[in-house]
Amino acid sequence: MLNKNDVSLGLLIGAILPGVSLFVFGFLLKNQLVFLHKPGIPYFVAFAINLFIIRYFYGKGADKTGNGIAMISLLFMLAIFIFKLQSL
Image (cartoon, rainbow, N blue to C red; front, side, top):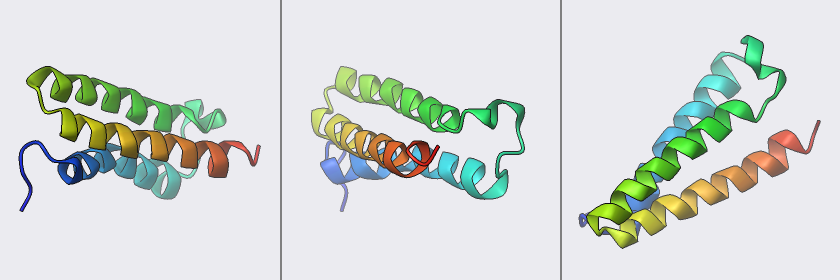
């Protein structure tokens, strides 16, 4: 099903952290925390953690998995920029 070095595995791994941050900060907390006067901070943190995960997979030689994580991370940040930050 999923090879250890596969783009679809990278897409799955890369979508976990942004999905969790979107669920927690977008639906559960709804701007209840002090630092959320800047709405992009939690999503930027999830993106930064994904960058470390990308570096780990590239270091292991799993380039296709790293590419999948990079693709979904960049798409997530683009979507957050368009839908969340442009409405300010």
